[in-house]
Structure formats: structure tokens, C-alpha cells
Length: 126
Image (cartoon, rainbow, N blue to C red):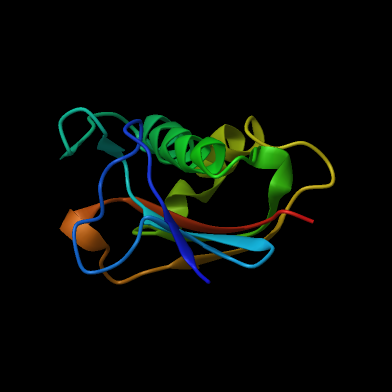
């Protein structure tokens, strides 16, 4: 049986989907954008600040699911501008340790609420 996971320290879903869903030994975290969970508003700041906010939101969902960043096996990073890659990567690497999760990074034509970054995650209980 699938189990929805949420956290007061992460933004609520803005549509008909779960912020995170446990399915067996996997936790799927829906794409997170740089919303402040207290206000549900996009934070100000450069791509590094926005990357940190997204990963903090992901961390809250991981914790609510009983996991940590070390449990993450796959991420997908969507950038509005691939020129932000280096700064995003510098902020991203501070949340993970080796062995790093598998990752794809793509430039998207447009992200929800015109965010500059969105990240989704798959984590494992195994």
C-alpha cells in the first residue's frame, strides 16, 4: 500500500499530487521548487540560495519519511537556465556525500511559478 508523506517544514503540494509517496522500499519526492514552507512563497536570492531552499525542503520530506540525504539514490534537477549549473552544483554538493546519488540535470522551458530550479528525488529504505 502506498503511503503519502508530508512535513510542516516543507511546502504543501500545489496540485493533486503527494509531496512524497512511499511505495514499498522507495520514497518518491515530487519536484520541489524554492518555496518557503512558512509562506508558500518563492524565496528571494540567487540560484545557490534557491538550490539550498529546495534541498532543505527535500530534507524535511526525507526526515518525515524516516530517511536522510544518504538514502537518496536518484535526483533530477530542472534548471530554467543551464548557465546556473555551476552555482547550483556547488550548493547541491554540500547536501550529499559519496557515493553521490545518480543525477540528471536538464534545462526546462518553464518551471512551476517561474521558478529557476526544481528537483525531484528517489530515496531507498533498503
